[in-house]
Image: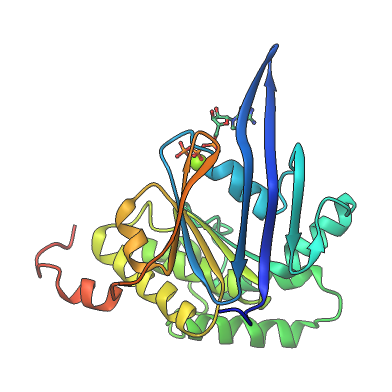
Length: 250
Ligand SMILES: Nc1ncnc2c1ncn2[C@@H]1O[C@H](COP(=O)(O)OP(=O)(O)OP(=O)(O)O)[C@@H](O)[C@H]1O
Ligand SMILES: [Mg+2]
């Protein structure tokens, strides 16, 4: 663990929001390091600051104070356009509602993050999209449109899209929140495979069960980190799926 590379470092990050003449302290000084290859869940009740934190990590918002280093680079010192490039190249996002383009094929959806990179031509773009879709088990659904697929399949497309740029970190916000139990396990299996392949994953959720499948869990309360623990007994999502009663389809 000592030799591992630090992918994310937060140093006393605060985020205040001014609402009328009142200040909401959404993050009250959050510090942690996340190392390459970790699968971290971030948990906490509604309003504890999870989305605010994820927005900082994803360079979608800037802290009121404190430092954020992504892959060794200080995000605070960057211009808006530098941050946009950083976000595109270093971060793969996965959302609860998939955020796919409607009536658009899997391949086209997955190609999207590569469009902003002039160095990658149309042929390579398609090849990489196809490879990413095969990696998430969607090799048979390459030219299906997003409205012709199930929720689990749409989330796989979103995961392929998050992977296609080979990002330093994958950020997921309630990625299984819209899925039934069985499909949630299938998506968790995929996350565990990505983890086993060395990917760095941060998965925000209010579902405490998910933490059983990650390697580390950070708990937020009222804008503070209240615990940060390594999981010494990571459960297998594959076994969890196998143990589900056969009739729990819905
Ligand atoms: N843009 C904003 N303006 C003002 N207050 C905000 C803003 N965004 C978040 N907050 C406040 O900051 C606190 C943390 O909100 P946040 O959305 O990060 O919580 P959360 O943990 O993601 O909750 P949930 O589980 O409901 O999604 C809340 O008190 C919220 O009202
Ligand atoms: Mg939230």
